[in-house]
Length: 138
Image (cartoon, rainbow, N blue to C red):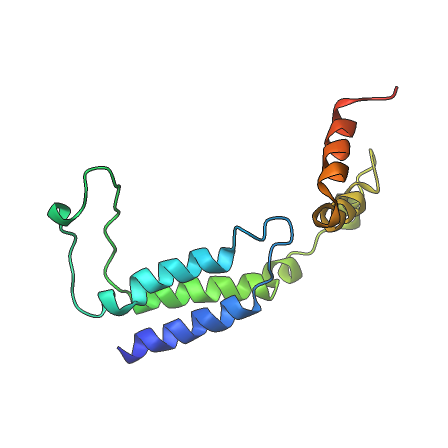
């Protein structure tokens, strides 16, 4: 039981540091992971329970939970921390040639600017911007 609370605290700490998606704030990675954690580590998983198909309606698809494995859960927490710390970006940095392709050297800079501007647009600006992609002035 104590191991579960340690894993739960690690998950909560990692998710508290996770950035909110500005493009899709209604779809939260934190909420998805918290739901999975509560299913796996919540009060229902403290006692040994098994899947009972007679309790479910025939319309729902239920995946039975795997038994709690502390080592596997800590590996999952470690994966979250490694993404938060940009471990792989630091370990395998991208070269200048990759970030500035010869065909369009400003491609990734433009892409980042577009991602930062998109959530701030009004519905009319989004609509006009979407039509700009369909019309080519050449």
